[in-house]
Amino acid sequence: MASTLDIPEDVLRAIPGSGEDVEARLRLELACSLYRSELASFGSAAQVAGLHPFVFGHELTRHGIARHYGEAEMADDDAYVASH
Image 1 (tube, helix red, strand yellow):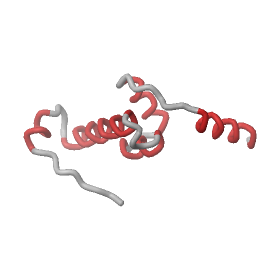
Image 2 (cartoon, one colour):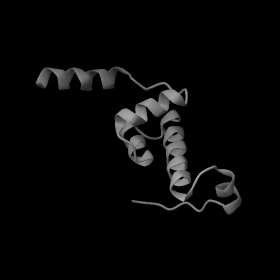
Image 3 (cartoon, rainbow, N blue to C red):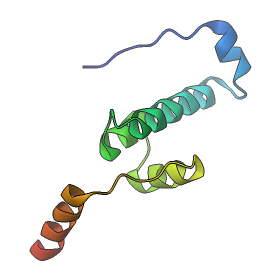
Image 4 (tube, rainbow, N blue to C red):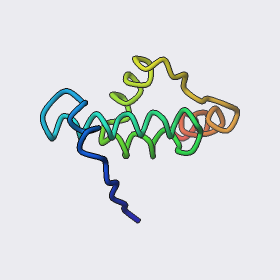
């Protein structure tokens, strides 16, 4: 399911940059917020941002957001390493 957000013009004008730059910035801010609030997984948030996961990880660091890494993620990583 895809969704469209209506952002008031005055808010859009307050964000520096051209149309594409503003959209990318809004997508990144939304993705970071969803990830920080644990409403989206890392991969899903990276998709919202439209960024490669490696780049999105750097953006999280730049925004001061710690990666969520618990036992489930460690088990996934262990399984991946064991299978390769």
